[in-house]
Length: 579
Image (cartoon, rainbow, N blue to C red):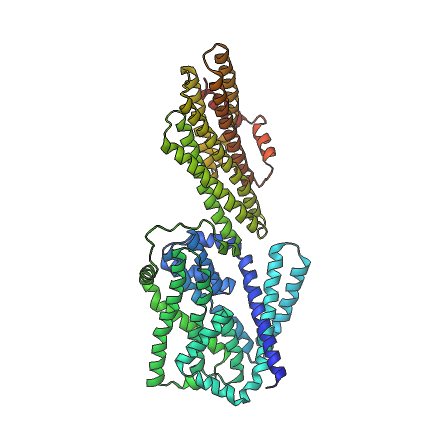
């Protein structure tokens, strides 16, 4: 083997790893729209979780990527640790699909139809289709499809280049001795674990082993322990992704490691005993690409067979090793790891935005209550809610901006909706603080409303409570019926505010109210009326998304334009909140 063969082998390895990385990332983006549906169907049922992990990994061609996603889901609260364990086990089996695809390169037959199944036969066609899709289309999904085909073509070309470059090693004595050395199962496991840890892909390391098998010097006795070690090495990616994550996310990464270590130890002991007692002839035979794929699948299936029924025990061990701190840990609201799967990240944003909406609603109701029942507990609650909403708007806005560039179609509209809506909820929380300040000023100055003013304010307060409740329900549950009620009620509140302003001017003229109280009255009316405006914006946005329209003002004009249902609702609210 010459220096040029070594350079060719390095070039082939680089192409192989690059092709696998590009294909995996593109598959992940292309399948992203389906990932949210798959996730929503997850249950604590072991079979469902296992099959989900298997299916996702078979699609995106990377157990490491699936496990990193799972760690992110657990970190964000989208998945429980028990669900994660089942998915991780499924991912270990799903990753064996890659080895089966790579084994196609070992097909040997003079039959034309059989030869067509060899990657070297159909890869150029896939590459041609891929480059046409990638360069000839502006649609992201088609570009991703093109990248998948190009990635596969580069991967297979790199595999073929590696196989050709290492073919001369079969005559090299040190190479022969190296794989004789790996017949020691422990050394084989260590070699497989080290190689996979370095390149962070068990699929890639199995592919490299398949390429080396073309020399005829890799026996099954050496290959099987290396395959076992590869499962341990692939845990490095998940362990790195759990750094700085919540304790449950660390537990998910630990379960991934313990599953692979326990499975390897159990079947390594069985393998060693069989080798010592029986020593099947197969172990001395040269390994083939297809045989390595079979061994890889059998090993992962056997590990799952042993440990899937023990998933509860693995969960218990994880909780024992990674204990809860004395003080309850704060769960991260948004996880940067989820940006790799935009639909899942967007789903998480919706959950966090719903939490923000509930906090803003709760803060407004506490502020309204403070007008008649002021106390320090209510004041602290309103201030705390407003601080939380500011924080949520900050992290959600930053996260959605990062996410927006990777979204398309409906998901992009959903992100735009969230960006607009979180601003409105934050403003509602600001107005709750304005109402609290007015209540505190009344307490400090000993101002008491007249009976007529109290009655009028009570009517407006009930209307604000209802519009906030309708808005919250419309947003958090996509309830169109609730959303349709917001705008007619908002118009009633506008008229009510104007009526209360005129009535208060009358009281001022009759000397029934002070100028100082009048200023507070005006502040309260303004804060409540503006709250209803923001509720209208939110409900209009919910309707926009349902109708596939992002023009809020056009939607609101259409709603008001002599719609009988709108007129009926407006009349009902006007009667309900009549002074």
